[in-house]
Length: 387
Image 1 (cartoon, rainbow, N blue to C red):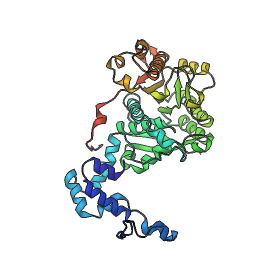
Image 2: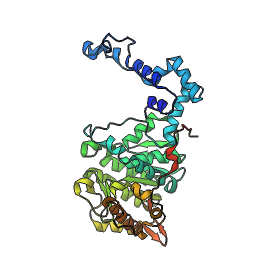
Image 3: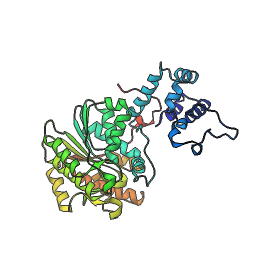
Image 4: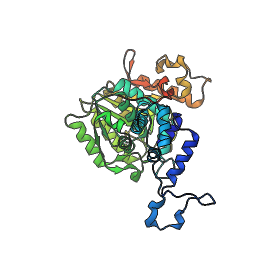
């Protein structure tokens, strides 16, 4: 959420003040308007070398330079200074596990990353909270590769855990760490891994993949201090074939990361994360899910068998399931709710969840299949500070 929207939604800035400050931000050269209401001069009337004459000012700088408006915001917020307002803005995003950056929503520029990032965002955030609360510990070394679900996991573990070492090739998460200093301060250290931009090899603009990325992850896992938790997004997830990736090179990178992680005794947990739209009992169509990460169904079954105590699957059910206390109170493998009460996509999810629960069973009542539920914390509209 941008700074101006945050102030408005906190009720610290009223409509008249917001409109006036927004106009000042657009009137970068300090000129007034002409009789027809347009900025003077227009971009068409000036030389490109003089573009700074009409370049907008950041909204926060405009507020800071208008004492009468700033005094009103401070009075309404109860804060003591402009810097305290900015700190509150940063802290709200950490506490509520929300992006502070703006991401392009166009499906064509360069690929639909922004749209995918916010598709089923509530479910992805809930998955991140499960990972943070149940699978990650303070002081862990967490690998977060490219992927929208992995991005939300990154926000969540940084909000909920302390003293983490973050190793990431997730471009969006790196941007968040740069733009929100309070998020960055939650990590003991951040290690950024590069490679090929995935948008150049058939991905969706999520981060870095390819041989250099694979080698860097292998080095991190193999050498001291290594990694303790490894996260992976998926483009699709089926009990029969396992995880899918958007393109072959991304699939190769994810597979190598998963296999190196599972082969290392220092990695305590490897987590596959998906929202309900990506979890089906069978592949709906190849185009929707992309490419399977593993060569065949047999390899996926072997991995589930060999690493059942270290491989975890975290998913967020459809809202109809999350709201049904009866369904959420029992193990997915024991549900008898596949009748006409639910829509076909929900029935598909329930069927897949039952299979995954059985596959991820570690004996008795224990399972490494986790379903995320809604939390009341999400409804908070009051700015809070993260210690």
